[in-house]
Each structure stands twice: as structure tokens, then as C-alpha cells.
Image 1 (cartoon, protein in one colour):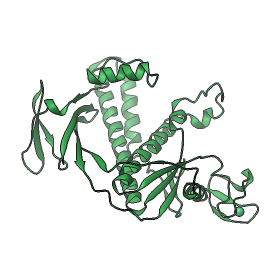
Image 2 (cartoon, helix red, strand yellow; image 1 turned 45 degrees about the vertical axis):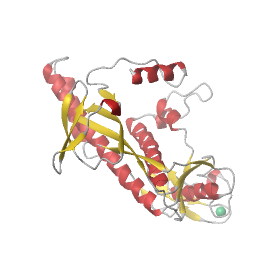
Image 3 (spheres, helix red, strand yellow; image 1 turned 60 degrees about the vertical axis):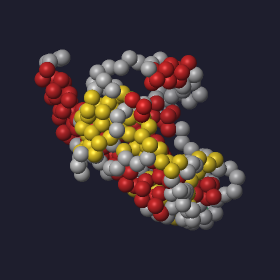
Image 4 (cartoon, protein in one colour; image 1 turned 90 degrees about the vertical axis):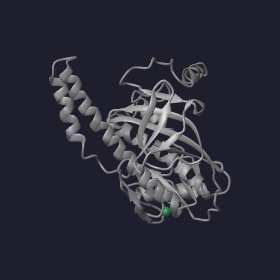
Length: 314
Ligand SMILES: [Zn+2]
């Protein structure tokens, strides 16, 4: 009821569309307030048990210790099984962070480029072929048959695994960055607009239709957004911050002399300044510009976290 109420409030406030009814196998998620959830019994090193209202005792894989006071408990069905997540509130002393800041450019070829010159590309999934095969099998099989449903389940399970692999990579990358740096400067990207529609808006009718189209692009947009979310809380936990700057001209400005010229960027990868001759990888040059924009006094808007951390255990 609480989630439904929130959904209607979001709808009336114009933040979201009209709430859709829950559908089996499509959006199987339910949330219990902590007051209705029983105590968590740790059975052994791997398993624990919790009593959920109307359901009873539920055993779950105890992947990490649950700290502090348990808030909402969420149960979700994904293609690869059921998951349970406990939101926990605990006191956390935020350490003083005197690590240096870093600029990060988010791109297509290199998912992330750091101002230090490092480039990280999200590794392509090794599961794409198998996923496609099962989708083809499903298309071939008799419509609405049990065998078609089975093939669809196979495909969905593989897609869920690929999504988990991407999330894992994002966690590893953001943790590394959060440990080394005190502030991360990012471009203030309107990611929602980027992934939403290729058709364009009234102001900008579909200029980049071809470039925006494609599953890969929407995956990247999701990765960028996720990256920002993860980095924000991981830095806040360590006393750092995420700073967002205006993304305009970061890719065509020289990070050495400040000359702004479209011709500076020779191609996707190469940056060569026409006034001072500074040469660098285009993404790294952009990352340095982003860092400069973020560390310049004024201009930047900060998003920081409080000292009270939220941790999810699953
Ligand atoms: Zn220059």
C-alpha cells in the first residue's frame, strides 16, 4: 500500500507515469517495513533465516553481516531467482579525506577515462551469443507454448547474468576510484534524456538518431548512471565528494592552453591542439578539463553524502 501511495504521489507530481499493476514474472518485488519483519537468525556461515509476514520463515544466503538497525526488507524475483535485501542504518564516523581529486570522462569506446591517463572500458559480455541463440529458439517455437516460455526463461536468465557481470565490474571500478581519490569530478550529463528516446524532442528533433539507437548505448547510459550512484555513496562513506560540472566544450578544449576549437579533436581517440601542439588521448584530455572545471573555485555544484551511511546487504 505504501509503495502504491508513493507511485500515485509521483504520478500526480509529474515525476512518473500512471502506476502499472504488478505483473507476475515482470515486476515481482515486495517490501516489508521493519516492524513486520521478525528477527534474523544466522544458521551457519552460509545461511540465515528471517520470518516474513504472510510468508513465514525464509532461508536466504547470508552473503555479508547485517549491521545496525534493519529498515525495509525487500524481496525481489529476478530471472535467476529470488533475492532479499535488508536496508540497514548504522552510525558511521566519516574519516577526513585528503586524497587528491580526479576528473572522469564518460565515453563510448572507453566507458571511463581518468585525468591520470587511465582508461577503463566495460568488458563486453561473453554471454551475448548464448542469449541470442535462446531468443532465436524462442522465436522459432510455437507461440505461447510451454516450450517457448522455457526458451524465454533461458534467455532471461542469461541476460540477468550479463547484467550482474556489468554491475560487478562497476562495483570494482568505483571502489578502486573511491579508495584512491578524495573527490571525483564528473560531467553533469542528462542521462535520462540520452537513453530515453532516439526520436528527439521538439527543440532537437532527432539529430543523433543513428548514434543514439541501439541496445549497447542504452546499456552504457545505464552504466554511467549506475557509476555515478555507486561512486557518490562510496566517496561519501570515505569522506569524499562527487562534483558535477557543465559538460560543454570539455572534448574540444585544450587542457594545456585552453584553446577551444572543434578541429583540435582529430578523431574519436586523438586530441591535438592546433595552437600549442599539446597531444593526448581525447578522453584523457577531456577528463583533465573536467578536473580543472571542478577544482576551479565557484561554478561547481557539489553532491555529498551525510555521515549516516546506508548499506544494503543481500
Ligand atoms: Zn593547447
